[in-house]
Each structure stands twice: as structure tokens, then as C-alpha cells.
Length: 412
Image (cartoon, rainbow, N blue to C red; front, side):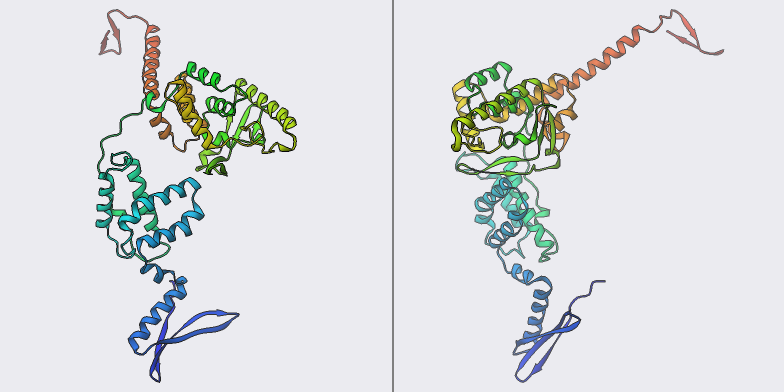
């Protein structure tokens, strides 16, 4: 049984006082007594607030009077900023500023109802965006609802301002089934197109190394750019992935851990990439001598001539330019999709591809590359049929009747 703090009120002169027993300090009793007001009722109210402040650090009474707008700021500062990744923090902040505060910010956090939140989500899903002249995509609406649910979940616990989450009753608007992603949607490139990219980005080009790493491993952009030489073993042929580079501003970057446990992995690499990496390491040694004291010792694999690391912002810009220059659909993420598709089409198991890509769930891999997995399922049926065909061809040919027992016969 949890013991709660109890207190009393009493009148002294023309004022009412409240008091309650606090936790002992060094074994000595600690009793708190304060003026509660001019009436017994005022003192009792002051006592309840004082005990609540004492037991919860004053946070509950503070949150009870807070607006949704102010609470979202409080949640961002005290939870999101301390616990979530940079890109997630940035995304949540944009959702709060652009969607939640303008419509829900005026409501009191303690009394906002499921009906109000449901109406808000319905409006978000149906309102045209100024930039696209179209309603937001389903994924955007899902993120908006997720932010509200996650923020209000902490109002229930640990803050204990409300007993249940009003956003838990809110449903997503109905959407038509999402069309299956095609090769065109994923911007998967052919090997001939990859050779065009190599020709446009020779080894001296700062885009070359990220290009060949992503094509040969399926690594994400941030993983390839965050790769350092101490995580590369050229003798045994593997790369360790345990960090990724993120863009935090113009020319400003940071390194973060993977989002999920599946992101931590070892990727085996082949002779083609090993030779590329050896050539890059040699080029860096030569540039180190050429630039001298002006060379930046960063230890990154993907660098400019002066040793400065290649950043996500540059890769994003350069990928758009290459798409325009070469005339076929392309993004840096195309390389990851292309690598996975080539592995699956070559007969690699789905589980192996999932682990190589660092997907937390096999369903993500299967759903993303449905265009390939459908062909794989068809090949599985064909393999089984061929197996049965071979087995049947080895069966002896019986003509007439085969005796089963004394009383029955099987007609062939």
C-alpha cells in the first residue's frame, strides 16, 4: 500500500494555517506549516495544493492550468530534446508549430476532448496545403496524430494530470489503399545507368566514394558518410555500421547512433569495393602530403581533397544535379533500393537482405521490394512443381490393377 502525505488545518487569530508531515531528515521529523488563508476552505485548498506540490515537485498543478501550446513547448524541451534523435526532434517541432499549435494550442491540456482532437485530425487530412495545393499525404497525418498521442501520453503518466489519453480514442481518416511501389517509384537504376554515374563522378570526384559504397552495400546516405576508417577491415572484407551522419545546418553535421538495434550490423564487402576503398585511402595519403598543415585529419572515408568530410546536404544537392544532367530518375537512395533489388533478383534470401539493409522488420523489406518478392514467390512455386515433376518421373509405371490387400485393389 502506498502511503500518501496527510495534513491538517487550524485557526490562529484571524488566519487559517495548514500543516503536513514531510520526510524525516537525518532521522528528525520535518513538519511544514504555512498560512492558508482567511477561511477554513481557503486553508484546505492551499493544503491540497501544497501536498501535491510537495509530492510531485509542483509539476501537476503547473500542468493542470497549462494550454496545449505551452505544454507542447514543455514536452519538446523536457522529453523530446533529451530522448529523441535530431531529425525526429526537428520533425516533431515542425509538426507542432505548423499543425498543432495553430488549431489546438488554445485548449487547456487538462480538458481537451477526444472529439476536438478527432475534428482536428479530420481537418488536417482534408485541408489543401498551400505549397502543393493538395491535402497532406496519409503518412503526414499519421505523424501529426502520433505527436499528439505521444505528448498526451505523458500527461497521463508520469505527470498524472489526466486519467486517460484523449488521443487514444481518435481514429485516422479512411484512405484508399496505397498503390504498390514499382521500380519507377523507387527510382531503381540499371547497371548501365550506374556506369553513367561512375563516368560523371570519377575517383577524384567527392561524390564517387559515397556512390560506390552505397551501390555495393545498400548503406543509407548517413551511414556511408559517417563511415570512418577504423570501422573498415580491408583484409577480412567487412564494414562495421554503428553511426550515421546527420545534417544540422549549412555545413554543420553531427554523428548519431542508429535508430534501432537492427541498424548496428557488420556488412561483408567484395573485391570491387575493397579495391575502391584502397584507392581512396591512397588518394587521401597523397592529398595529406600535398595540403600539409591545411589538410583536415577527419578519419572519414568519404572526404574532399582537403580531408573535409562530405556532408548529407552536398549529396542531396549533387544527386538532384546528376538526375537533371543524366536524364533518368535518380536519388542517392536509389542506390540502396538498387542494391537490394539486385540481391533479391539474384536469388538471395529475404532475411539476409533485411539484415544487410538494417531493417528492423522483415515486413519492411518485403513490402518495399514487393515487385521482386512477387517474382520470388512465383519462382518458389515453379521450383516446387519441378521437384514434383522429377519425383513423378522416377515412379514405376503400373498398368492395370495394383493389389492392396486380400479384399481391395487400386486402379491406376
